[in-house]
Length: 259
Image (cartoon, rainbow, N blue to C red; front, side):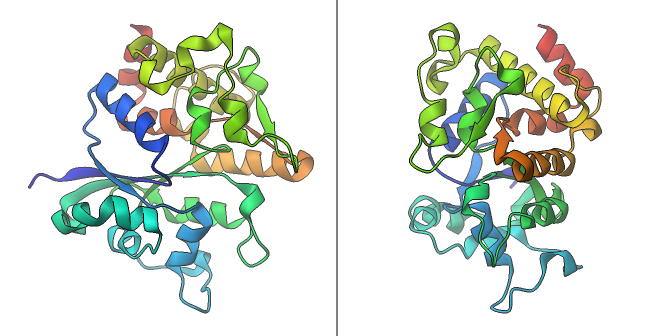
């Protein structure tokens, strides 16, 4: 069996719809997918024993495939049961993980700051895997407004969830409202906008960066963490386009965006 790319998603919907749409429109071989079925804090918890060994003290490699297989969520068991019988860790050359930034789910025992530890641990796709974080969730991918550069989410008790806010119909941006109706040109524009937004967050420049190093995941998290601590807000940003930037390389992606 040829070595494949393993994609680990936090949830089933709309995570699968987004990844499958991108795979189809850009002809990517991302067909091997696992649904973890729990948030990033549960992923963190699954790494540790009952004593909650500090993640920053880990100096050994983690077998991410075997780790993920131990998930106890019902979604994971229902969706991945057959899949798990067909593959082993040795079947994958690259591992990518996509989870949401959910500061409102952090607890005293598992604080928000552990997300940075996770990003530092899962920072190499050919080893433990590369973690990409969506802000505040997967719905950010096609949540476009006329002020997208400054678009943020602010959680309020009793207010609309981010999912509801992102799902509200905006006539001027109807081409992005439904994932299933997005075409290739719409997709490329979404990629461009999120790359520009990431560069704005990191470097205060709303342009496509020249290098992925300018918009690394840890750098984005540091900026978002400051924003959240100061104002209880997070900039809306999908990291899936950043994954594509790293996967394709700047020159190839720039060529795609110019067509």
